[in-house]
Amino acid sequence: MTTALTLDPAYDGREHSRVKHLVLESYLERLVMIVGQKFDKIAYVDGFAGPWKSAKEDFSDTSFGIAYRVLRDCRQALLRKFNRQVRTRALFIEQDPASAALIRQHAGDSTVWESDFGQSVGKISKWIEGDEFAFVFVDPFGWKGLVTPATLAPLLRRKNTELLINVMWDHIKLATGHDEQEHNLIEMFGPNPLASLPADPVGKRSALMNK
Image 1: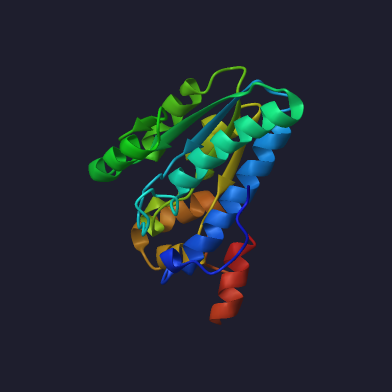
Image 2: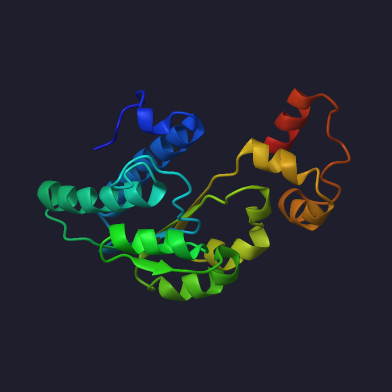
């Protein structure tokens, strides 16, 4: 089911998205196929569903399009290989009204919330049923969308829940140059997050990404 790392014209100029989507696709597929042998119910949550950019009419080059297809294919594979009837649900969260409307049109019976992810974490934890295994994909758009551990706490504390968090280096680098992000950076990296960083760009990047 997983697509190999090949050139795709739809990703021209956004090759980083290609890598991110391949990671999501392969990770989600393996998780559902493994977890689905034990759990009867699996919930998938995308906190920043987009779509930010898409070159395909069926949105198969977006995170929500990929997740919707993988969940469908894995349900069929679990039934075929293990005689397991597993229920999967998807919740896509998107703050932009136009983007949320596109998701509703192309993601079948999935649930779509037009809201801010950070302000919806408590609601999300209640949406996930007690006997479900939950997989939450957190892929913030830009440095302003950096999500702190304190915000994610209701999900991090939940049993049978896994989070995949994508934070691009460029977003962290931009955040370090904005005073209004100081509190967010402290929440992510601890007190004085910039005090002991190397001066050279490569050393600075390595130090922040390994904190």
